[in-house]
Image 1 (cartoon, rainbow, N blue to C red):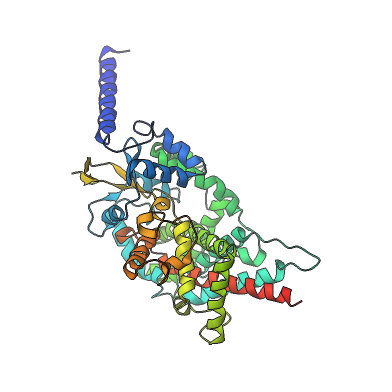
Image 2: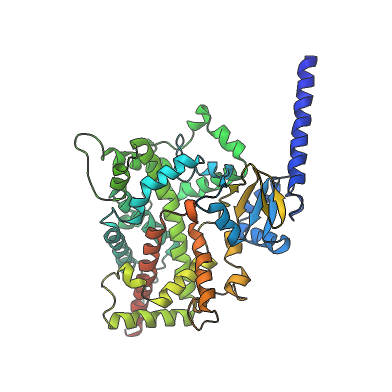
Length: 474
């Protein structure tokens, strides 16, 4: 080897070692698992263990509300710090972790953009469509899909004296949210509920795709390799006949219908985005993000809340008393209650909040980057460029916020007389709503997700009761 090249290589190696040593020492004031200070191996094992929430919870229990889980990565369960990082005028920015959320092979989306100016502009352009202000079919479309769910259960999954018909609630709720998001986004349902099948093998591929996203989030270097032109040919394509590629093709086709001489004009979410200036290429990328991010998280919340309600006799009985009383008093629209009506039912709302608390739908790190000048956290200086992820599971089990019985599903904690003062309940609500993000990084899809939760939890519980009563009465 050329002597000059050898010297240059040694200099680079020394600089690399010094940089890593400086990074190691910079966060030395924060407690951490044994290997996390100098390696990402602990984080890799925690995420792929299938028990990431428990590992993260243990870290903050043992090392404080903000602890170290990587050479340049902190983990926090401090609600005040979460709000500080996400506030509208906060100098914190999205960390490299967000690169992993670029779902389209060649384009970023509102979730993955790290450029603040682009992200803020997109939020402004898309907020009207998500809020429902420019989507006159929003609640109607959700009602139509929910009627399909209830009809599917009645026709196919009600057992009889002679036949046992088990139903996979997780599968059905996923089909429901996928059909909802496709309908409200661009006016066409995927058709999961019509066939009670996955016509795209989307869920099967998702089980492969999501672990890959987790890998990219830990090792961004891998994603940089995946962006090479040769490797991108192996990524899902809009011409694929199954999986995410098929979804991409569906999105491309429905977006294409909104342009050209004979374009479709409809006052839905996609129409709102077009009105506010999104390009055809942007729309294709954003619809893919809507489908993947907006369906699975909401389905998780629905299925876990229903599971918690139906597995607790006292909770189930109290909720059904509230629902049946409201129906007898003609306070509920039939066959599907209105979103506004659901918000007048305090125990239903308490069940939904408690479900979101125990099983927050988004558990990724959502890491933010400390501004260049650094910051003081828990009395310690944190250098600029450090990433800070949130521990959603840990936040929702803070005893100082929710009480000592944080591992118990107890909707009563949200109601007057449930052991909390009004001020405590208000604070609990502020904290639990962090599951939808906060400030300039808040989830635009929150209104849609809450509408789906409000309606589905109530109506599926209603149907469950009616089936039980019909069976008991012969």
